[in-house]
Image (cartoon, rainbow, N blue to C red; front, side):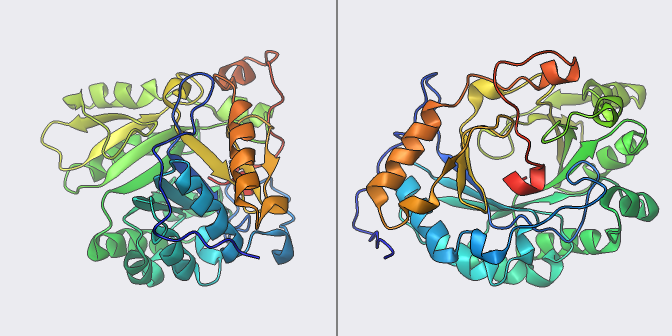
Length: 345
């Protein structure tokens, strides 16, 4: 039986505080582990075996978990996957989530392939802002990185996002040595004449710590070095929205901005305010570590769901140790064996 949480129920200030004093008001929800692309940093070359539909949380189950989380102080949601737009009727689910008392902001992370056709419905459902993955603007290279994707569809998604009024619109670029690091200049140029925010992200060892990852890893100091080499004057600015993990900059005279997300070389764990709900019903306190709690057996029992959130948060370490992974050093906890698409990007 689905627990009905009415608008009259008391919505609390955040009580999701961990033992290190970090308050959590942000929940990232993976609605599917499936994806229409197979990016080199997200999935193995041999592909993935996706979960059958019956193992994934239903719309009703997701709404119930989020309603309890909102009563505990969750205010912001991000819808992820896999690729969230492969889930049927996603706009209807989002409309239900945005109607939950206490939820103030709902964002979407997508690879953009299906976004142009669905942007209007998503905006009407309550999505206010989008992050679009775009690791190369060169058609042949984009196909290589995504193992078959069409970059023209992502560029069309950017245009549609501007047209329907998503704000901000962020482009996520996973920077990889020898693959797309020669496009830094082109991505910086995108910010000059548009309000786009380009975010360079360090290649993370989520679910894999191979020699290939170590050889492709590139610290994001490289981006600032390119700015200097190009003679660009730039300065630090505040976060475009909220208290996200990005270190933000703007080139003098530019309409947009760029950000650096460096979880490996300079982690941002001290400011972490996020929890994750995976498509198969796991609450995860940290992207990198293996610890997670299965919430599905608690459906219909809001007090138990609340207890699971508390118990999961109590296990959140002070920091991940991706830098130790880069150096091939021993870590204090067990890293996840799940790939990014299985957890939620």
